[in-house]
Image (cartoon, rainbow, N blue to C red; front, side, top):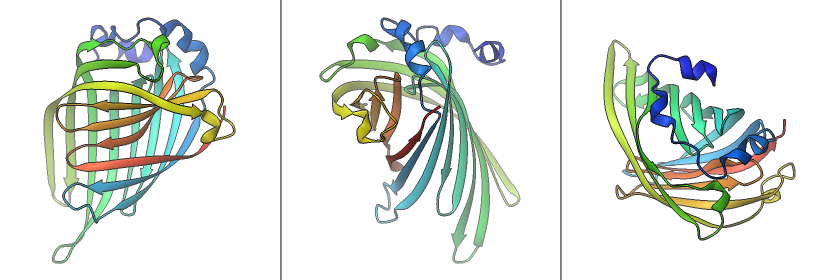
Length: 238
């Protein structure tokens, strides 16, 4: 955590509110957090739902402190590869991340074009978070409201582009029943709950919360461009 606290451009006051009742038990739980998660995924474009892309997803998790986790993700598709390094709070709120991607786009007239891009995201506004981890069980609800600064740069052939946008994340979340974590892997312990987060912008986020590890794992993210679904295939313990 000391490294992130000293990094230029990160205002610690923005993410100080992360915590609250139940956070004291997180450190012991995340000390048991599995190091590697392998998932199968699929990406469905909203504009062309028949064009489904299959994905291989590998995630490495390293507890940092105070509920923060370093999440390293590699996604391999049919014509693209991306790697993301992210400082996350419980796997739920992204404090800072950088994604590097490399893809090949084929066109009838243009042939194959390689596109390299870098996306950086930083938490720059924190309005509210009323999540209480020790209350998390089916039927429990909470909401969160924060802003992200997103900067994208891409390069293709002789052209390059840069873009900066501000994204607001305002969602209402509800916990629904789950089951034993061994449903996903015999190496997992405890139970899991399913979590559904919705926003007014017609976006949907589904997560799995593993109570023994105090960690949220993404199951589905639906936005206007894409509908991304993931299936946990295997878990590697420490």
